[in-house]
Length: 181
Image: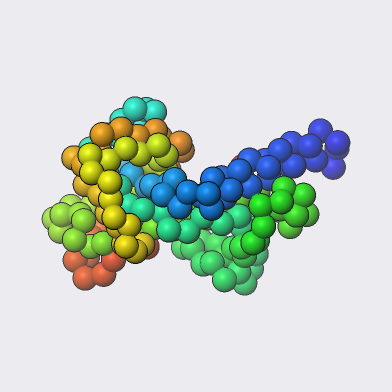
């Protein structure tokens, strides 16, 4: 490994640590924007969504991110997603994250089944920050959903490329986002 790539990896771990630090300082920092699913020609290779830093198209609402952790990929990690497993690193020390190869972040939110229309599918659109609500939400648990009409402003921090998911009307959906730096 060259010195340049080691420095770059260290910088990526420092950036990942800054996200966790922000979350720990203000657990209401991150929200996931949920929107109606667009018609995709190929589900395995969806087009880049038309999202800007100002607006998410066909916004349904926002779900509260109740977990933000630095993680690394492993075969038997305690965090299981559809395609990989991850192990959390309970530290925001960039040196420790670099030694654990933890340059990824895991975000988790719960989308209540009542939040999306039964007759439609939705798409996880973006990770957002600086969300301003018409009325301050009273956060009582991880299943907090705020309708898009209740949001005055937001900043799209990162565009998420998750497939559309059908609302089965029975259970809440666990929204899992892995972001690699």
